[in-house]
Image (tube, rainbow, N blue to C red; front, side, top):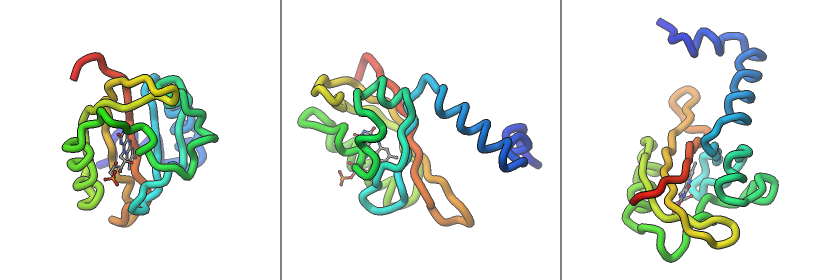
Length: 132
Ligand SMILES: Cc1cc2nc3c(=O)[nH]c(=O)nc-3n(C[C@H](O)[C@H](O)[C@H](O)COP(=O)(O)O)c2cc1C
């Protein structure tokens, strides 16, 4: 049984147009990496720029580690690393740093995109929080 979202996505062109509008206009930051061990950034939306100060065009090919710094909780990153290795989703919060060095609390989820059971990419949904 298809969900309402899957039904909407059935037409490929319509599905792509819909996904594009959703991502480009989301109030949350959307960051996508490839499936490699380093997780190279392949896409970031406008809200990512608003949140972090990084222009998407400058960070393609880098890794989301650019957001980390001395205050980033190593235990949270270890948990994320374990999730990536085992192909599981992650949710957490940690101190990250904007392009100008300002620290902030990042709340984020990372989810695998699977095609025929093989991970082809990782998608993160991110937002700023005020408490840790
Ligand atoms: C899609 C995706 C989004 C990520 N977003 C963040 C993030 O917003 N903040 C952060 O501190 N780490 C983020 N990471 C984690 C780092 O890229 C990296 O995987 C993590 O630091 C573990 O690797 P390391 O132990 O080599 O540092 C993200 C990873 C992926 C795959």
